Length: 116
Image (cartoon, rainbow, N blue to C red; front, side):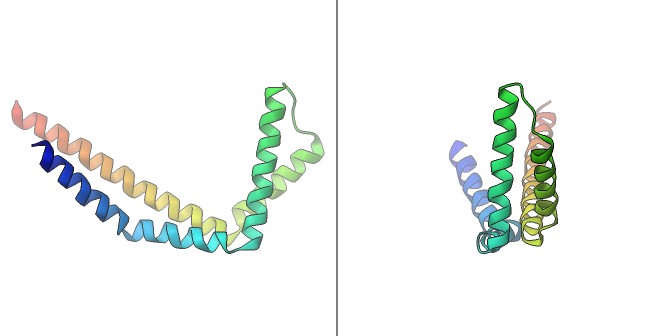
């Protein structure tokens, strides 16, 4: 029985790797990597996030200027088409994975009911 489970898991893994959703994530990721504006935004966004975390650990908050910059970068980050496309592709892929897990769980429940 367990050999069949591993074979089915391998088939599922292959199907996921060949899915349009994953292909779109990879395409969007490559576009984002190749976009200097997106890369600069990502870098600055992560720097400001790190600064915020470090200050929180010390019980401090961002200065007004840092907060303004953080909010400005965050807004540009969310408006950047390349980043937005990547985020949407990731969300679509995650939704597919959530649906797969739901199907697996429901199949398990149906199997348990059949045994009763």
